[in-house]
Length: 254
Image (cartoon, rainbow, N blue to C red):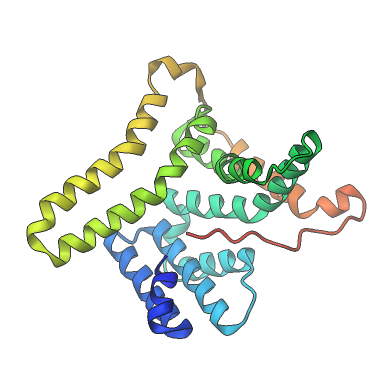
């Protein structure tokens, strides 16, 4: 959003620089925790690679950012927010494109008409969510000792309002910093926007949804699950018998 806002005014290169500054300032406003820093650095790498004429490979960018953050603060590896952010992004990079292609092929087999809109909706709100959850559910089970099965249904319905929440909240913060009398109004608008996803999530996890909460015990199955998942993913060519390994990576925009 920052890049496409500044590009017509400042041009391609200066627009990218202004976008990086804007992203960094936004990260500062929202607290700059480990997950936010991870997203900020990956956004910066994406913009820089575009200006340098280099292809942005999501897996390389994620590994470089994780190494950079751990080098300056090794304790970040034990930060739950960083772990969830890292593995959610990893799930999108590894599985978003294969899962989306699989869904598109399935839909096209059952319908000869134009299903591009339906395919896009399913991929954007269900398939991509599942790709991120596939790698984060073991992390949540390990740290929080429970898995919310209803999240597979609830999360896709929260996604459509998230852009409005982020943009609206960000604008409200900027307005309140510039125009002091507007602070009370901006705060009310920001809280109203934030109430939408939280109200939906709280409603979906009430007592009547208790059967969809799976309690887990502390065990070593979570790391083993992730290890096995990644082993199958990167060793799929050998398992399948010589098929080409995954070369293209999905780069999430955040």
